[in-house]
Image (cartoon, rainbow, N blue to C red; front, side, top):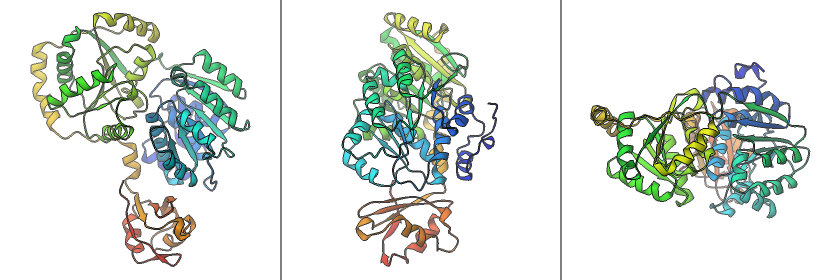
Length: 481
């Protein structure tokens, strides 16, 4: 499967254009293996480490094969966490942006009624956590008649979180004439059993790379007493002086303690843990991706679902108790071929967890000395300059692809008998605008949103201020995010 450019695949101009904007230049190993087989509608079981590009490996061919005209969902993607559901939705929205593909994420801790209304709109792809997806199926709000593709992402984590029975219940509701894909960093026995039970002679793909962790990460260990950890953390961050850093803690109490200490020391930082409201968790994730702050202190809730192009340093403030967590935490750095570093702090009573991790990853984590005081003093000036200076905005894929897109808000919708075709017909008549400049259209009861592509937003906004739709004058304005 030696495909070394996305041009080698039979992809539409809309998908190729999005890949170009997103800077997807060369397919990764997992993408080279997966893309052509998904395009051939083959069932797949893919074992691939975090950060290997697996979301795009199914996202690119799925977006290619989705039929835009079809109203009901054609793809169902199951993820173990809300954060990952949102991340996968964003990735697929970006890849399918110019094809106007609507991807929707459904998960708990968000109003069911809001998701129900969204599902009444034309929706091509649904990404969700098993519990909420099952909820929608049982209440008849998620139509399964046209689901041709089922993707189970992070299957090992589904098992760890006790979702596997719900996943099985969902599978039983789907048509057997579908393509099924399972992606997992590890393949426990229960996941294999599930695959063989519900898949049609699946092809097994294993991306071994150099073992269970990626070789773009430098791993190091510092032994420390519990009471000295906060001092060590400050010293390490001064000496390493990362552009972007995630500090992982075992408990939300530790997260709050570390965050408060760093915040009081004027670090550019935020925190993330399961005790926070979902809306606040998403706001923190978005802020980190946009480069609004440099340090994120988090529990394992952030170990999956954060896809930031260049987190340069991961610090395990606490050694993770689950060996798999080490792989997922450290996999937040060294992504997409970039170099990264993972430093783990180990107290004497955490040694047993570290040894289990080493057996799992297949190598000993090299021990390093804590930074010497002269090294900290030497690094102070550069550290303080970076902390006070504006952080360089990350290589944010969503921001790149949305750069030339303006979402317009119209104060009319279904209650005025307005349909998507009415917007297209009216807007495409504006001089200098064609139907290709119109993106995703969302029509609700009393309002509508229309994405205008290719930098034509201001032109359409100005023209629509004096134009009627179906003989009705609608107020138009840029949508507030």
